[in-house]
Image (cartoon, rainbow, N blue to C red; front, side):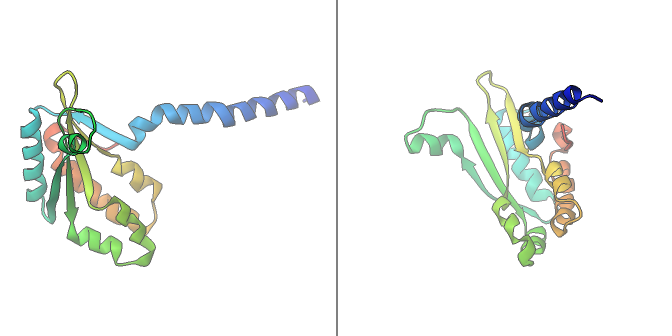
Length: 168
């Protein structure tokens, strides 16, 4: 291998590492970090179905439902259309997560959230963080074992829309 090829390879590797890989991550990040699925129901029925399914899932309960559309308007923001956020919790899993100082940082994601929104075309979507990705990123840690149970339960709650977590 000559010196010119070596330098060319180093430059090409640098360009790929600094520009191409971050660009690819940026393009894929939305699908990796967040999941959304179209609801078969109208906005209010979707909210009610989710509240009922969460409350019927053993150990889970709805903490609150935030009407984000009203909150935004109330404090001077524009009309964004129907958006509600369901905050929900499982005391057993939350207790497991928060009893150990090493895993208390996960409190930032508690209670969990599912958003329901209606787009400008009248389609209703359910949106949430990708718990599966978080579980994989934290694999072999105490919090990942708890997150695996959470992921299973959320998939069960959302089974009416055939929801499954995945990386993409």
